[in-house]
Image (cartoon, rainbow over all chains, first blue to last red; front, side, top):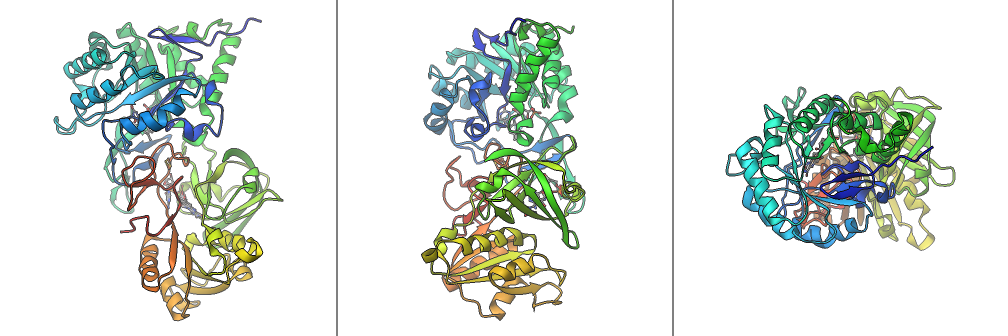
Length: 304
Length: 264
Ligand SMILES: Cc1cc2nc3c(=O)[nH]c(=O)nc-3n(C[C@H](O)[C@H](O)[C@H](O)COP(=O)(O)OP(=O)(O)OC[C@H]3O[C@@H](n4cnc5c(N)ncnc54)[C@H](O)[C@@H]3O)c2cc1C
Ligand SMILES: Cc1cc2nc3c(=O)[nH]c(=O)nc-3n(C[C@H](O)[C@H](O)[C@H](O)COP(=O)(O)O)c2cc1C
Ligand code: FES
């Protein structure tokens, strides 16, 4: 029996397998390194970093909902300087691809972070989180406006030596439009989906479950939406797609790959099972063996 | 810290809505008082593990005990588990009580309601400290709703017990602080876990008496291991992770020095 080639390639960077951890759900990798050898992962996406430290939202920041959760962390992070000094040296030695997720309130802030990360060794990709609340636009994310997305993509590309992944928000009418805006701006890849905006009300206390009132929905609850959006986006642009949204098992991940994702990310599944991503990797391998696929990459977009 | 498949050895109902579960797990080997475990539920719609304090641990026997109140759907599900069932646990998590600071001191352990279990572990651990390290006195102040108490035999086995009940059916009527004052308890070092109002009152009491106070905090958690930043509590100094005065209860705590955290 021939071994399965698990490698996939995105914008010229080879990942040893298609499984990445999703931003904000895996810390800087250090937190999970006690549970398994991070070398096994295709890649790690770090928590979003901004130009200066962000305090984030008041608590409660977390609410459980059926088959998922709402979060309103508010992108708490120590800022890019601490990230570079403390977290990157660890990630660089993790033995897998390193994706740095970039947050900002307005284009200038994103550019500031991108310029700081530009050319820094040990960073394989920049992932631009365009779901952050935009201060100037009254808190609405710039990720819903195709013109602003295209401009931001172009601006990031012009400042980054590393390949740029644009991370799309699902809170739009037509994901194909925003995917195409990324392509027009010169993105190297797109990742989706970020969380869907939700709300939970505590009926006993008659108030919002989250201090922020709304929060981002993640987990299996969003998976069918995510698979549909990955399918639509993958067929609308010729960029590689990183698919995510509710992936807990290899079966879930394979759905995304068949829909057109070159790689997949495991998000909140790590909370219930710190080793979830490893089981996904092993399961994809077994599936390829079972289906006679020589390469994991053969699964990508196989369902049309 | 590990993920482990634990086996339930024993389940008990201690009082109305208060359940106890003893499990065999390797987590027992390194567990310290004040630490907790994440209990994974076994239905696929409730995905967040439930943080539960370790109430007692036996490293040699590899057993831990969890005592919990049936609060909502998750703890309700836990209450249906039986001897022989397996449970996925992540732990031991967090930083515990600094029992090593207790040598020669008068120690007061304060548990309000379902805050009592981690302090039972603290009492047991204090008694196991090496000879010169032992406290000279251990008082356990426990606040219950009524005389339907739990863990009282365990408390009385290691400490002088001082009780308060909301309805006055046992001990001092009122709060646990009322019981502490009524019994004229003086302490050098206080470990506490319970509702925030109780912790706030204790902080004022500690400031007044000059006692050193450590409190165990509670917050909604997702990862339990410091990765998601969901469980933060306001701190007086910049935290070590994000440098923004928001420490993670799951990893920087749950036990904090009362001076470190903003209890308002
Ligand atoms: C460090 C720590 C130690 C704890 N130790 C104990 C213990 O020893 N015994 C005990 O009875 N309880 C303890 N708790 C509280 C316990 O975690 C909650 O009562 C439990 O999670 C409720 O789950 P549920 O599904 O029954 O309630 P639901 O209300 O249905 O839970 C919904 C969601 O909210 C979360 N949640 C609800 N209440 C709390 C709470 N008070 N704190 C944190 N998350 C909450 C749940 O984890 C879940 O994600 C502890 C909490 C923390 C943070
Ligand atoms: C607690 C939490 C924090 C997150 N933080 C970020 C972030 O900083 N940047 C980002 O682009 N996405 C963030 N996300 C979104 C995830 O990366 C992912 O897109 C989303 O959760 C869907 O995947 P899942 O259903 O597998 O969790 C966060 C999600 C969660 C649950
Ligand atoms: S629960 Fe995730 S950081 Fe504490």
